[in-house]
Length: 203
Image (cartoon, rainbow, N blue to C red; front, side, top):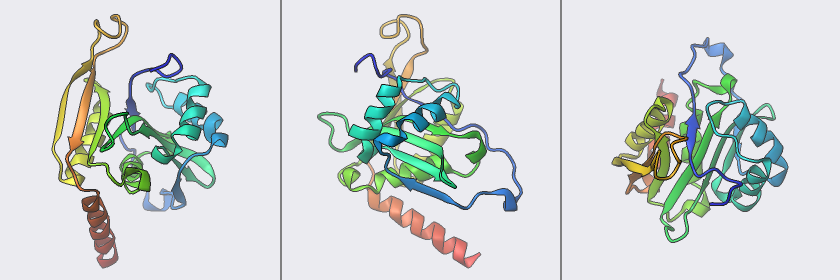
């Protein structure tokens, strides 16, 4: 991977805060990014420590070249969520999730899970049966998000050390564990969404 893009993936979706139901925003929309979103995405990631910030040019390339496998979440026209991802060369059945960012004001809404599901339902992911990402051992928010998503898919989750502290990061970064979810059937995700909607209507 080029120097414009740090070869590690992190998720930032902190512990949800308690909100009164009337305070929960209802105007959330998910869409593919455009190159005009690059600056806003760069700022969103910078506002979500401990996420790694890449160059703005990297974020522009993600929005432009990889729009089909990236998603931006907006509330009242402002970006509050972002996932960057891509289908790795030679692995057409895999979606690799690079970063997940959720703005502080949008946490506690399950937005990370919603964005992941949105991506899997894209035409670009029609053949995807596995999801991968890398997570450091201490990133509990990321482990929680992907474990819950694996449960929702009814798919196994496995992990192994991949980018190692000494061998790959020169001692400057914690080991990143490659997390793999799958195999799964994307149709199962749609079925789960339908059941959720049915339960809400019945409530």
